[in-house]
Length: 376
Image (cartoon, rainbow, N blue to C red; front, side, top):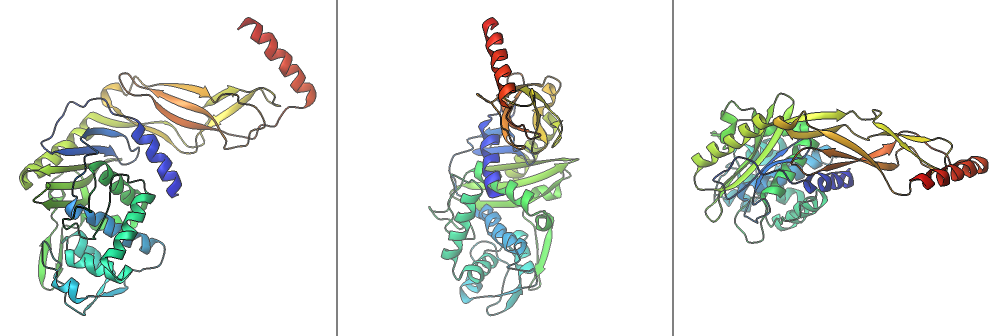
């Protein structure tokens, strides 16, 4: 699954979006479609920055992965160390030393309250220390294709070794949403009470009527205000990451503006469903004249609403195609052509086995190809 996801990332980020008629006062920002991965807008997407509490998306994802593979349950308890209890810099869940806390409560402490202490509790109980936990974080970052990211702690506290980019944070958020839907709902909770203290979620978009349901804010004086956010509008989900805002107000307004623009200006178009017959390509030296084509997944693209009726497709067979062919082999490319946009390419596969022709059929196929070649 992780290998497929890497290939998917290569495909979707090969396509550069057309210059968008919008800007933001964030230093660096990106908008992607969570389903197709298409980049609607970007501004300095690969500029390294310090992610602050957006680091906690990865911390949370480590826990989600362990819940998914069965090595943890929400009712398991973690013990609070003195180090975690003393952690009061930045935001806190206000844990108590030596207390056992359920994993589910710690997740809420991280996600809703952005508790640095809760992060340390999780890191120490999973890996023994925060330093070892960061190795897990970096391994997962590598597995999902983050190329400009390194984690040195679980909280996002400032360190020159704890850095990322808005593009990597968007990919991380996309992976989180698409792979752990059974737990992602925690990011939409607006408040959580612990130790008699009720705290509200710091994500300002959760309180706006724009369909937002996650993810995390971040702030460091060295890098400014940031936010990784996601919202759904009908059947579409967008992910937007912005960093380097100069105030929480500009962050809130700027991110809401980017999300609204993305929903207003773009749409998704499904060209073909998984296993649907897409077309035929000729083949020589085979017991059949043509190979039926299909796709291993739905072929869906994100496109400007102004261009959704101008989409063209072209099927290009791979070079030197010949039998035998097995069902599922990649035999052609579907080129998706949109005016003033980069051409997108999707692999097409054989819908059935194609056997090699017998000697007699091969001989007549050879004569036919020679004859046709005389007139080409």
